[in-house]
Length: 283
Ligand code: SF4
Image 1 (tube, rainbow, N blue to C red):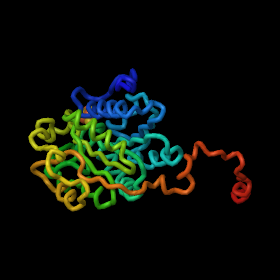
Image 2: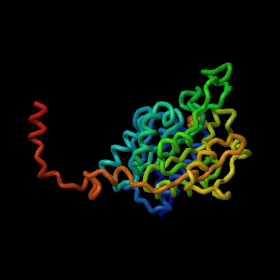
Image 3: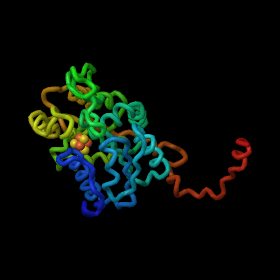
Image 4: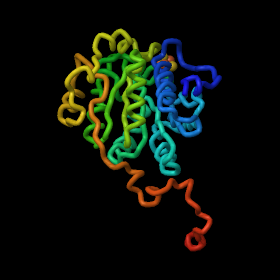
């Protein structure tokens, strides 16, 4: 299948040069590489610049409320676990407002691919600090510099039991395509944190800034089964690893759930289910 297959004629609202464009392109290419039919993919987003991504994809899509990408994506997956479910959130959406949902989705190991467009700022609302904004960063909400320490999403993912923990960069399209392909193929929850430059409001973390710091972890001797090695990698600050930090096999939530483990809910014949006792209870 070709990536053009997922093209939809909808005018983009993103700023020219925004790091969201390569993420959109990488997602289309990954879906095409995996031959996923349009009707079998669902992209769920929240609020923020990243939240617009379902508008630009010819798949099923749902733009929900702020921070609730994962509850909606979980509902979709449990209703029809034959679908490929992809969540897209920003750093504010995914790590701030939706941070609690993320921890629990990871420990459950539900089979969802979660792409976090991490631009280290609130872009849509024109530049306020987010949970991943660097210390001392001056913004509209921090004119004297950010005094809050940024959280480390990959470290949290490893501590929460995530089975696929990775990081990409909008400036490395082919690398990102492969990462998304591997994330979708992974059976279980896959976190793909993407360094996504916001060219309008983040003057610090630019494409050049990342280019000087990133390196491809899969070109080193890193062992992706080694939890402690992965933890160490999340603590690197001067050089920033991209690629898969950690990946292990574990049963997925949806494969363990008795009601759907043999057949997805939407395919089950419910015509003989007697709901009258339940209705009576609610009278
Ligand atoms: Fe992209 Fe930033 Fe513009 Fe939002 S504000 S579209 S993140 S460049």
